[in-house]
Image 1: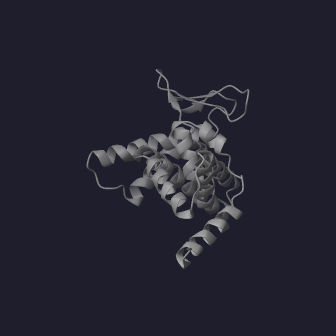
Image 2: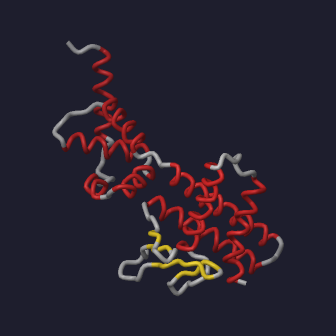
Image 3: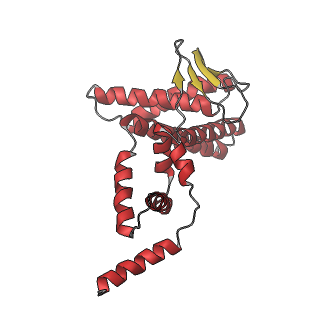
Length: 225
């Protein structure tokens, strides 16, 4: 005999199945590896995660109820949680993007169009760098100390970002602010933050963070002037 609780559970299951569309590709997700897959998972909203898990369960030949899917989602959330370095880099890039966006608005209000354009371009670069990092892009450190990053456009040469007084890229943008430079600067700032934390120092104050952001910005601004 089916009791009221069973009917409710069945209704919830039917509702979940009715809204389950193959918007998220399970095969595409499983084709990703390592941190790229973890980053992709963290970018998904709850509905997309529900779709992936439900599809995976059905592919194994099992039936499911919403509670089963939610339990598996919790497992994956724990597995794919960003590590300390990833969290630090994402946090640094976000701070840098916000900082430069605020400076762009201030420069525009002060009728300084060149400054506004520079800060606006930098804010866009840091935002794009954050997007690429969350997609799983990880620069490779070369023996020379330079960073190797893949191009976002198929067929184009990768970016090699090196320090020669200022950060410079091998692509035609060179020292002009764009996402490879922004990503490298964000990683450097994150490593600095983590080093201070590991040394037992207190969390950086807003003034200290502002000083570091200005230093990172000035390395690129000196080339853009």
